[in-house]
Length: 337
Ligand code: SF4
Ligand code: MG
Image 1 (cartoon, protein in one colour):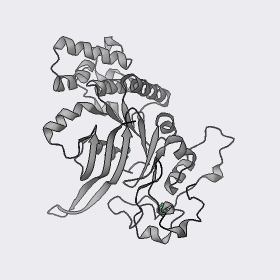
Image 2 (cartoon, protein in one colour):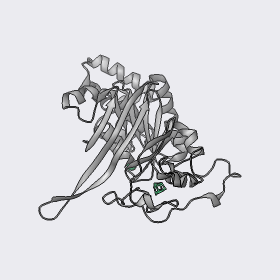
Image 3 (cartoon, protein in one colour):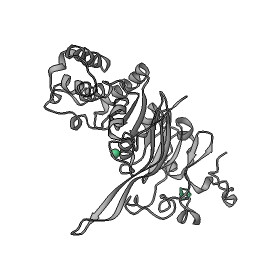
């Protein structure tokens, strides 16, 4: 399949200012050198605990933030450094579905106004054509056309998320970043919204970056999965391979905490409890970012930051356990087979 999105060494550092003069005294390294591809028509899941930088990464990829450095290509066109007019031209191709539909929809606009806004901004459709398109979009996301003149507060959370999705679809995007799109919804309607996203993906050939802390949901929806810890992607691979045989010690720990669907095979004793807290992204440890908590930490881990590299076709990991140039680690049980 064709690569639609190519992210290389993306960094998103926020300056820390202090003192009377508000001098820059440091940086929060929210995203610190992230690389991945997303193939056309697939869903890449981006998982990790809250604060790991996954939302910031999603926003930076769409250039809703100005990246500190790195490259982001959409369909071969550079986004990271694109000047305003080029970005404006590319904007319709890449959209976002936000976590909290309540906060992301203008409460003073009607549903038709909200869905029609990107059409006003980026197209020259007549009023009639615009309304037709708004109705089409409402049909596509399962909203009754009679609701077009109502306001967001008149809807349930699930319906509001449908409005947000219709708006994201208005300009026929190729790529959508879904940032925790169901986290704010009742459990009873989460599956409906996920199913809708999957149906729309098939219908319109969409490519998703699906950001979530919910590992079971990501296993359901994603084709491939990237795991983030403290601003870095530590592991990336095909969904089932990654879930069934994680390579990185952090992925192992994260997955060990997910209840198995089959309670008979679920063994609480296999759960890996990590010691200590996640370090601050303003002051990450020297060497591997996970070295302060890793059950398999080695001396080299505290000195050298492991490179994120492809250890098997399609399988990427940043960990010294998988470094071929260090044969002294070859006896480790976690070595790739
Ligand atoms: Fe653990 Fe070392 Fe691998 Fe980091 S590089 S995850 S500290 S074994
Ligand atoms: Mg987040």
